[in-house]
Length: 389
Ligand code: FAD
Ligand code: UDP
Image 1 (spheres, helix red, strand yellow):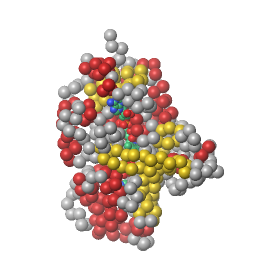
Image 2: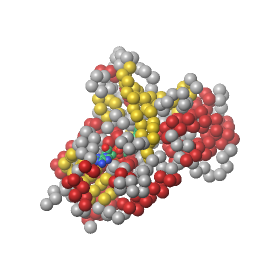
Image 3: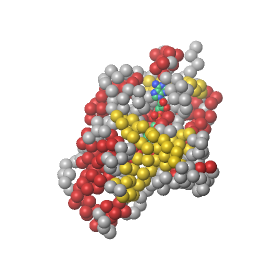
Image 4: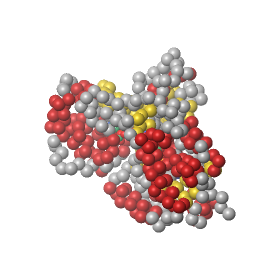
């Protein structure tokens, strides 16, 4: 007889959270399948063996949330540092603070506007957009006016998405606040920080907490695992956190994703750029941003984190359109994609024993906290009733 109550495909945040809940709340037996050689999905981090600097293998990850339930949940597995994220951007050879705040505005216009004056100016510049903005470009201009949009968002967005800003959803730009004071914290959430001992340890603790009833298969692609597919076909509950279009063999066409190439370099200096993230707003630099990992942990003072060390690690991020074989990182979500996604969603309703979840499974631009929240909600509203019924 089958020994598993559920199969989970993907050991990222969504898969791990459902696994942990299934084992610890419902005492179920779980098979967790992950095609990569590690758990944690795109939030995985690794200690660089040469410098001992913690690098986020798939791009910088800063945890932030205002969701009390999620904050309580993640704190079961790790303490968080009090890191506060601040991002700078380089435009025409000058460095400005982000997100757009009074400092950015006054530096850009060589002025000393008060909050009210700055607001009036930007409102006037934004007034060229009259209708309700329904794309990233119009939304951006309606928020900060054309000059600031063109300087800091237009070219960065075209490098990042390779899709005209007129075709991108407006929600992408509302991820960033606009402030009429000098507060340049990137996030406005109640809680923010990094797992004190690193992301890898955090996810390992989640996994350890459900070891008794969990079998983990790393380096295993679900589509190549006949045992797992057979179990799904026999009706075993399957939580699939890979790309939904791949699951249905792209029958309605490919969803558009964006992938990122990370070029790593070890630089022989103590501090390369003075901050963790420097964005590049112009087309002159083909990359969107440079991450310098040691700045994520100012509280660490060992090895290369030591002020006397002469080594640092940077990643340059080059964004490109997803091709088969690339990692799908960001859902582009043009109107056409959303229509295609709805077809896959409808198709998924025909398979009541399969739940699609997470950034890839739901084709959603979820941050980490939103992924935890969605997994906890899915566990409560869909997974638990599945077993009760
Ligand atoms: P994933 O992490 O993608 O996990 C899915 C897992 O499924 C992967 O491990 C994959 O290998 C596995 N899988 C897929 N297909 C198969 C298969 N066929 N068989 C077996 N396994 C399979 N969020 C923040 O809150 N803060 C940030 O600063 C932040 N920065 C980000 C930077 C980048 C570059 C990216 C791409 C994302 C960032 N995010 C950030 C978002 C964060 O990465 C996601 O919210 C989170 O990873 C989503 O978790 P998930 O479990 O849905 O997906
Ligand atoms: N963005 C931009 N310039 C910047 C930073 C962000 O144009 O310097 C736009 C860009 O379209 C980006 C979006 O704002 O995709 C959201 O930025 P965020 O930093 O949240 O993106 P992520 O960290 O998810 O890559």
